[in-house]
Image (spheres, rainbow, N blue to C red):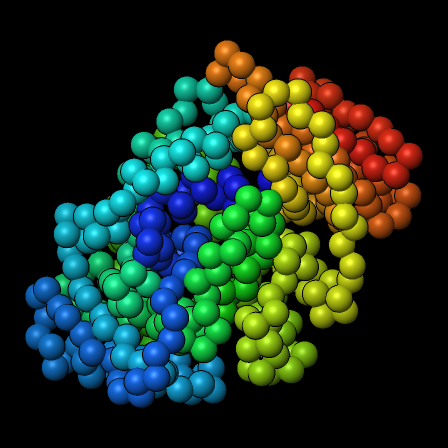
Length: 397
């Protein structure tokens, strides 16, 4: 199922059908990115502001753009307009075509319910639309080719957000971070891995930019972020949704730093050209750098009309086990992951079922995962199946 399938509940609902965006939330960015193809213009960034005069905004954007360009060792190929919007205008732009993705969100909701990760009465579309409308502070909109930042001025915190989004814009111009092929059925896990790479790169540049600010500006940025975070209403937002949102930003920077250690900025560029394809490669960069093979696993049998299928993935396995066995055991159980496949089907009466089959690198890894799945299944009233080379589970809800 991969983290991306579940993340449809928080990310895809705000992606315009033809545009798609990269988000930054208070307290940490929120997932998902895509953008336009590059052009050949070499002029500097231009801006449109709702309450700030153009000249001061232009100067700030140019300063941040120069920092990002120097850090990434790449020059911008075209202007990146920056729009400042406040209040309802920002939310309207952010959520313009959310309705177009309702069906994807409903599939994600059925998956999470079948796994016991959200309650049956949770309306994921309504909850996450409200959450994102409150939490997002900036995004890169490929449909319009611009960045949109919440607020009327480029304050210290807004400049930090701008550094993150300008990194997306630069990476997109050179390497195309709009990978529509990853949105096709069955590519969930590859999409999740690519998201972590793209977000991880933007986060580390953002952090470098913040570190270079004056002590006073860093203090102001921290206060602004704290105030913004305090204003976000997380009531009713399932914990699993909050964890899904934060995952690319937590693990992505570590992966990118491993790339930098292996070969500097050119190695990051190479990864954007030929990205990781599994979340296991993100949490264990050696798997990506050494080209560790992934075992192909046949899709499990579905006992009803198929709603979705693909690779379940390391991160989703941890996320599934974690509420029952705890974070440490869940990660130990998932370590040694070598490949898997899952299927989601309609079980009738409003119920859905998920069945997933896993193979591991060693017999000891398989025994550990089987033991943890047994504990989880007993709590979730799920079933565990054992085979000579793998283990499976079936969970309905």
